[in-house]
Length: 255
Image (cartoon, rainbow, N blue to C red; front, top):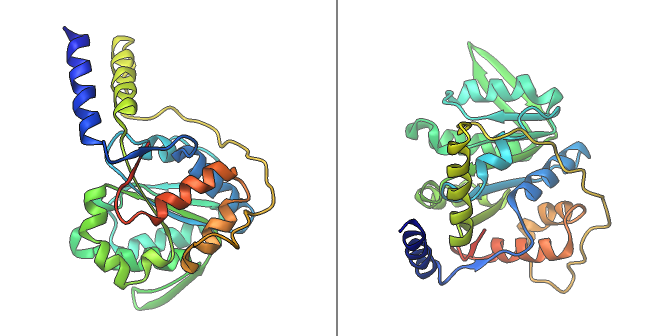
């Protein structure tokens, strides 16, 4: 009976995702690892990964929180507390991860989007306790959110220039991946080790190479810097899929 139910769920998932194309090469862990390596090289890149639970956002980010040079953030701070935190961690950070940006107070969302822009620019200024504080830094940034949050604030992010500074990566959960995710959770539960925390992992030390040749490709100028820097660590096949995801106006690809 369980197998029949699983087949029915998979069929419904296939019908729901008929319009999506499953990525064959690009993975979120590879993107996050490449962003870290770019930050290590002082050639920072900035990504916003939007998707629903199960696509690997938390696994790919929180699982490397123990890596030296990674600062993982997922909390509810005020905008100034957030900027103060960035100043505090900036000296030892190569990759700053803000997981699930929608957790904060919605009334502060514009302030946080402004702070995200500052991170992409490598400089922030703010006033606290009658003091003007500023900080300069040179690390990569990865921001994650649900698809719903991304679309609720997309116009604001566009107006504030945030989407001109990051690569917006919108992906859905493919039915095959959904089955694997569910089975893995079931196996972990049966083994008595079903945890809310993803297993810690190491950064994959990808080999650096020349940037991808983009002369004949129609890539928006605002995306060029991030794409060219990432292309020094990702394969051509991965980069072609990444460019296709970025150019899609809506979630067109699944992972």
